[in-house]
Length: 421
Image (tube, rainbow, N blue to C red; front, side, top):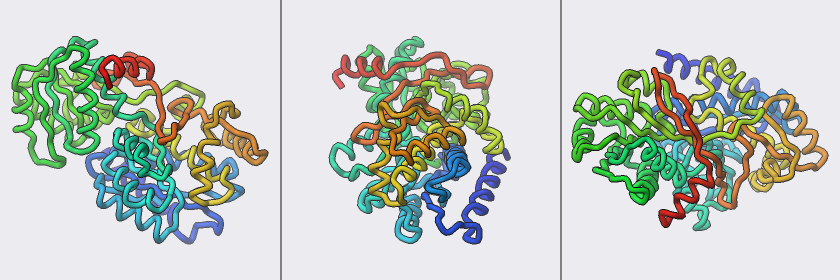
């Protein structure tokens, strides 16, 4: 019921904001392709509201030369083919110069390869973490238009391996979603986990939206593992976890970032997750973090600021809006060139919120560089549109996700180096 109400509220808001009769002549439209429904619906709903909040703060601060930045939000339904159709409409019909999305890699990758890269349209993903996106950049297949406000799974898989062994989990079975995200995460995890001395008893891929995962759960129990590493999304993940528990699997779990979800915990049952550990792309707290945590739940109508993808989606929206202002016009090439100026080393520090965006717009008008200090921390993009940052280590206790530590990018890099990666 909670999820239905949130989606109804979200779609109602989108309908109002997208109505042509309310559009000013100089409004600048940004395309949002978000997973509002499907297995990743919880991520997309939080992400869309966070981008909307960033745009409101920006517009209240004065907008891009007095013009509002508005979102045309489309539902990918957590499917790559649907996402490509929606992105194509946004580019070819609505003539958008920027697309924010998708949330999951299996949505972002086809948008990038089929729509934005060929058209030279800027794409910013708040939460797609597949290493494939970096490889596409290295192969020259992105035209330099892709950016993301989340660290790569090449790092998260390594962090998860070290965290698991630190908890005494010497033997692990893996069940993972059989897509680019799941395959890459498991590859990185497996290499680091084995190099650090761990044993993987089995690796079982699964396809999304199955009615039952009993056979996958049974297969994963072979070899008497200490825990199950579940690389999934909240809906399917809950079904798999219940199948594992009902089949007699040990109630100890290692979870990926997207399983940091109230819906997942409620669907499985908090009493079965007292030994559940997880990793997420972390934050280096800033004034933006405090602002977002204090205001997002009220703005969103009840979505917690800790919801998957929420914090980094605000940052994606803020960076896009500020880049449009710095570009001076809604032109993809100009916006692409402006993004590094928004996060420039040595630039004037800028935080989230209306007052800070007013300061940023004045500096931009004066031709001065700024350094956006995001909700997730100071943001810097490399030549492939990637960021680096710490990883948050968490566990579930009494039905709540609790942060228990952090692993730095330097520490993860050393582990990868020692493992020969």
